[in-house]
Length: 62
Image (cartoon, rainbow, N blue to C red; front, side, top):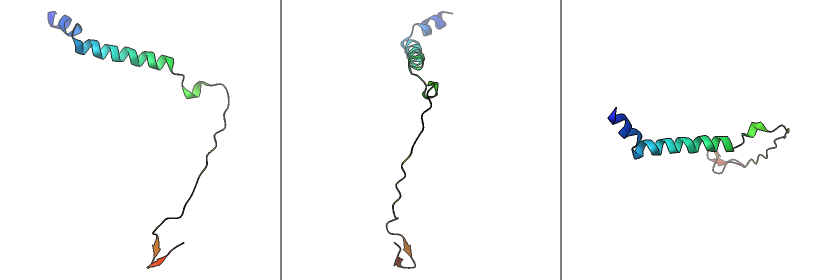
């Protein structure tokens, strides 16, 4: 029982519990991306380029 209390009072245990508490507080403060009631359309821009150095039997492909 004495070893348990000494572990609970140790810096390792306090550090772990402090990190756990900070993590829970952070999760409570951060709003999830899916929590909005607004519908937002997502758009993407795709830029394609030619492969440089691609060859076809020794001839450069464009």
